[in-house]
Length: 342
Ligand code: ADE
Ligand code: ZN
Image (cartoon, rainbow, N blue to C red):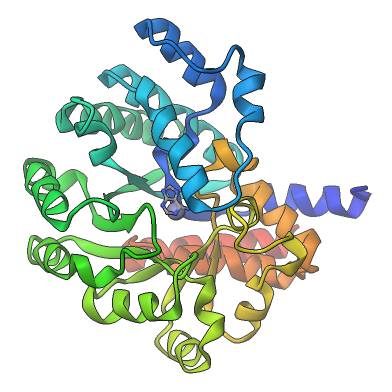
């Protein structure tokens, strides 16, 4: 049962300025919105109610989740749908103390269903602008390629994105990891970097440490998404610490998808104590039962993180972001001032 000191820590966490660096926009589509959009577009759903849909969110690995995740996104049809979903996430993120969010979107999920790239990016973009005006929250967009599809498909998607070059900050790599190594996308990522985009990639969520090395050496990523399986390779851990490579870790996601059996078994604290630049993120919060503050609080309780650890995790999130140096320094000072005052 949560104690009053747990409640005080949860309040401290919620008010702590932080960046979210690993959030899939399509993973913020709450069951209530699935039903509302399905009704709006006359789309039939396999589930009779919001509760029944929520009960179906029982996964045993990444693929069992992805099958449900791709099906859920079918209700996203027009610009307003993408605007509403994005606005819903940003409202929740702001309430959790997120001051800056670097947001993944999966255009191939939509273009394959006949929804135009322009529809997706215009809907998302209008919500990003509105949230910055309303909450002061800053954002970046990261275009993710689906790695279970051919590299040629990713290259076509990259070309479709070129007219919106300035709306996008980086490219990423997600979807089914096993059997889809980063090396398959070396050419696509080279082109993306030539076009001026930064790069990140999911690696070492279910896949082996070798995929983390490939992402670093062949895709030249600035961050590794997940990366928790690095622990099986001591030399890789030493390299990640020495090079200050950020890992965007998603604790509740890892438990829901069976990467760790229980949150108490998560290696986040061990990696943090080895000097890796760890951040906490929510991945697909509509499916995994918690937005970023809940990820912080649940992990803090399960692993006995100190207040110092929690502040370090918030500092890491800003340091690992793609914000300009001046903004990073300003937020780091705000974090320290908050910690000193609370
Ligand atoms: N797409 C959405 N969530 C994902 C995850 N946890 N791993 C890989 N691809 C994803
Ligand atoms: Zn992810």
